Image (cartoon, rainbow, N blue to C red; front, side, top):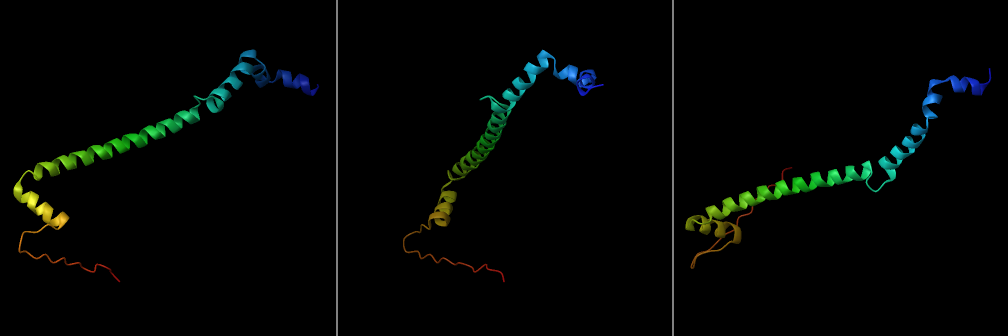
Length: 106
């Protein structure tokens, strides 16, 4: 028997010569890789969405901590402590000494 007669008896030949398969395979390849709405582009969009959601979470936590700080700064003693520590403010006739520690470990 010749090569072509053996090939025609093969079950894969019958599957891959079906007109629906011949049309469907290039269509699927086109839709998965080359179309503007391809799987690869959707995967990039999903990664970008995850990054943006993590950014949103970070800023929501930052907002909550800032609201807590604002709530604490309503007290005059806390406000004074914050101003002294953060901005090195002082009262009249008061001297401030800044002590820096050498924290380099050998």
